[in-house]
Image 1: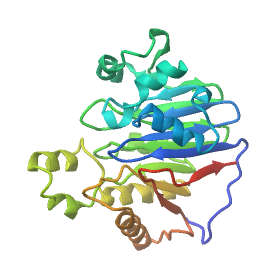
Image 2 (image 1 turned 30 degrees about the vertical axis):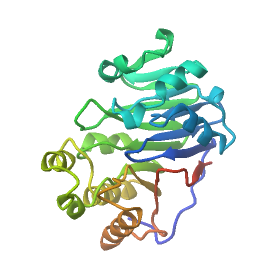
Image 3 (image 1 turned 90 degrees about the vertical axis):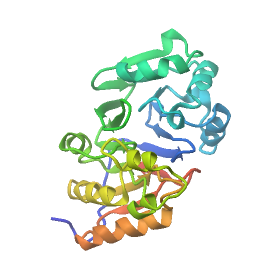
Length: 274
């Protein structure tokens, strides 16, 4: 049963999360603990990634690793140059490496790391979960002590396995890619592309995101960041308003039971779990 007020959650160790960019123009999320500093994806140019990290006092040399979700360019554009410049290890599932390896000629062999199940980077425990997309793709639950943040973007539908992997996260970056009607009527996209996006291996709609967000809140999540919004078929205002209303229809009030933000193509907010 949900409480009537927004709860104060205490964490044993400080975790700082900063989304550098979200959407088709590039995706990158920075996560920091007392000892570890990582990026999940780097879909910006190396120059732009460094510039945005500098906004929070982090330099490229500080990054311990980049973890890749999948091979699409908006998630790995800057990886090759960044890894070469800063000697940064790159972690990806073996099936993801099959797609990204030809595109990462500048990454040293010694920096190519393969995960198959949970793995550690210093004081972070990273638990990958395969998610349904049109290429091999992974979401991540990332833990440090009692703090847990999860990232779920580029998925066409959710499953019990995905939910069980991320439930209990205090902070979740959750895809809310498109409004169903906007996508249906988008003349800029051919029918084949619209069908791919709306398919079971495409992207989550606002409706699907709201349905999953309800389950997350019931499992204890108190901060959701709507992510990977389509430039053509959604807007931050629409995603926030629509999903907040859907949750309210189920008795979950934004600002009382959960806080909802929207990740943009530019950095907006730092989340601190402490």
